[in-house]
Image (tube, rainbow, N blue to C red; front, side, top):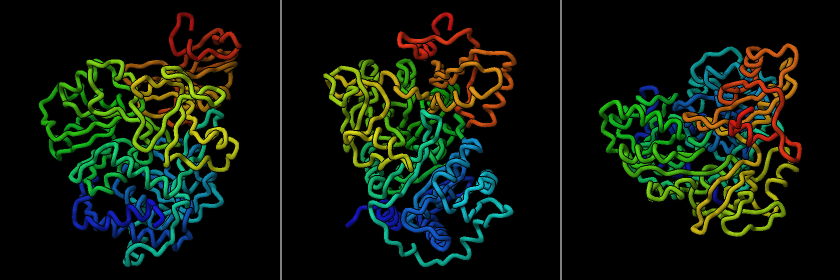
Length: 506
């Protein structure tokens, strides 16, 4: 039998019947209701021309219908193109055009971006929360679709099931292509690595188009209950733990710190909590000690990329030991289906403990970048995924990240590519030269800062307005610093390490 994500999840969800699957916006959805609506929407997608590997954009904030849409695209055999509501209009328009999505499943907040994208391939827009002129109404589409189970679609493991966009060091977003087989193995890896039980209650407050979406699929495979929230709020998180007995949280360190601070101020029963899964950055030692006292031994860290979602390495609950601070500075050891290597510029392994590029092999590594064969070959050369991160592996197999070769900034758990921001700022009148770097920040992990060499007419407020119009909120510089010149290395390149360090004069 050919392993596919469609087959894996379609079969799993049918087993759970009336068990509650989702709680969102004050309503509880059973697995049977989720399956019914996903099947109906899948029939509508097939009628709209969706078949194996056909791109379908999902453009929604966190809500139950996002999960319905996700399952419907799978059942129709399509390729999901997730679009985040934090992306700017130009970014959304690029994704719709580049992916050649033929259908967009949008909420009322993102419908205008879909309808105004001008993508020649986009033929149908279905909107939940409408009505919206020029789009089909979600409820009407479901009401008119047949209630006869999933459509009869022949899907192969090699069919494209996901095109997920990530930033690029050249400023262009890249569509990361994953197959049905790879994503099926990825979901199974999530279940294995997190140790999900049959009675889990997952609290999801981070965007479903990103890492939380993979965790949701893993939870559905186990028949878990998913508490879906549109936004993160520390009091809401504590309420969900105490009132709804949430067992699994998925957050970035910035969010964990805010929940910790609020938990110190109020009495709350946290006894249901089993796992706080986090990524993007390590937790500081003092915060971990505080978290262990308040929450218990529940912390688990992951490290992955859009090119290999979520689990390249894992730092286990047992690894979160304040008595072993060196281990806490790592992102754990290779996941069960993963091989990690540290390679030099020639692709040769470096000695244990030596620094080099972090490379990985796994059955859920991407197939490549959409329409970018040269970039795909460069990233996947030698049979390894070249992550662009610089790191070392110690004698016990723990991976320590040292730097990011591609100058990616991680701010509040979101990836920001410095060149993408630089391209926007450089076009602002009065900017002679600009370098963007992530400066350490106690709350965000890294703050996006634009270092500008100004010319005549440079106006910081105008530069901020340009960034606001063209960049997603998390990519916008949190500060502009004016310098007489940018620091350079001995090789004449801009010294971003000096900028990040806050060295006097920079």
